[in-house]
Image (cartoon, rainbow, N blue to C red; front, side):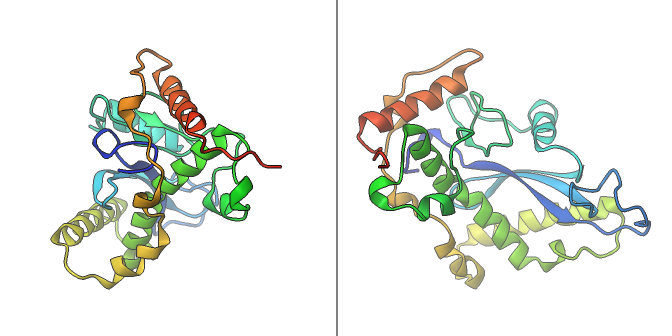
Length: 241
């Protein structure tokens, strides 16, 4: 992987998405399976690699469950393991840690925010550059979910099956997605999504072998700071006027 992390030491991104669910008894607007918007859904946690292959999927959590709660269950009880020395790129809904590198809060993060800025003054501090590179690379999970829902329309309008069957449908769709992607056959859906993601090959590269190894409770914060510092030393930050 290019960008600020190397392919050998970095995995892609864990992410959650809301899948609409359908149940017979839906007279109550807000239920245990309702998300914050009020519709009945299930919260799906998935992690993928940079070639858009799902590496881990957890289904069946009610829509009202927080992302952090689902991730905690996945790592403690659900078999979600991150190899030593590797990292997942996670969004700001999670806590930065030795296994999950998150963006800096209180700084711009979304790609559109940076794309609106002049290139000569795009970053006002190293944290913004870090966040931009992070967002560019983590965008692959957004693209992967987009392809999944585009291919399997059932995920947008789930039939009135029992909830257990609905969760199995989501898992089956993820498995079929992996099979199609690994077969590497011409696929118009994947081809159509090719322009929706930042190309890793165009990112400036800072290898993890240049970053001191961090241990202990603050290992994630130390690693993130080291990456940010390397970018500053490389002169990649252009201060806005």
